[in-house]
Image 1 (cartoon, rainbow, N blue to C red):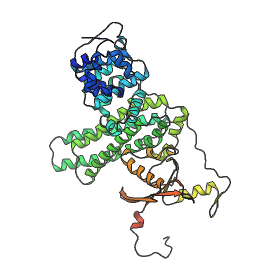
Image 2: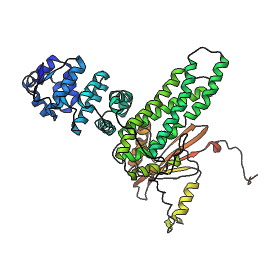
Image 3: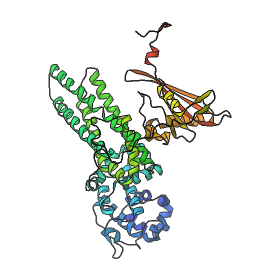
Image 4: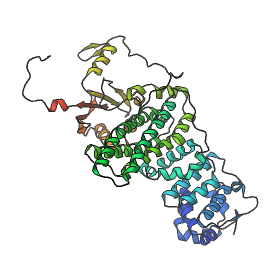
Length: 485
């Protein structure tokens, strides 16, 4: 069969029925094709040139995509009429066309199409892809209604489709002390610890007596404890790097990665709980944890970091760098002072602020807030983080990157519904407070949220107060005398 702008849509679908689903998924404008009446009337006489025009797709691109789909599904080569093969002889160049082609490939992947055939279509239409294109594609799919959880579910398969192209990209090159340089150092350290755990995991597959297994468990405990420090690596991404990317309207990939971070944290928690209980995790559980970490390293270095390096300015990287120490580093420290570093401005110690019951300078007010035996965060009426108290030991990590960030972006995706419900109820005046208590790391934590309203009842924001009440809960009797012994 030869295909051209004059080829009839009806004839193509008759010959290759799977093209109907392909076209419907290709563009929202093709959803009308679901009507069998339309296909058997207008479709019998409509040429591809007319179909392409209705769908807002360049004719050469649509012809090339159809030919690639047929080849991927059947292995058959469709001849493209002379003069209409521009898109088949070279990959798509137009940014909008490439984005549409990428989205179509991922939609088909999520609909169950064979990854190998989609990889072939990708090679035919795109061939080389930039990390920023993948980020924009995921962003648009989320904006068009594809759940973030669905993108996360097949994230690894996405990478496999684009893998050959991604690995042709140059690795990020940054000076020592730059935030990306430190992330890369941490990845190498994580790989070293993971290799040690993997060597022990291999020994678990064989038979051994209880004494032998006990020895392996004793080796695994400190190694998994060290590997758990990767949480600091993820926290810096979530609180320092992701907020700056969001300022460039890149949030989809960050949301997907954060959800995967949480999966890794849960896997880590299960493995360490088994060891703490005197048992040895199954080899499958250990391998799953190590593979998840390795996959995240790959996604960072092949997609996230190159994309960030392309998009962020020197001033953006200064924002990323400032406050990293407040979260901490996993296994390493920045190797050198980076030329883009700038000190954070010291708190204003100027004129006194008139309060309802007194006056305080900004310096003293800041000191008071940071000396409270609890953590405070304030989200303004626009749901933006406006303040957090930076005490000596915060319960939950915060860093300057969250200031001005939408609070919805400061929480893992799995808790977003709860956060939004609290804010909506506060804003509507239906509720004034919400509270939770959890146990974490041997501590009992009390977390409260309060609606903040002015004298007229206008909603001004939400105050979060977190407190470690472990010691308070253990108090008994009375203490009326000073005890400084």
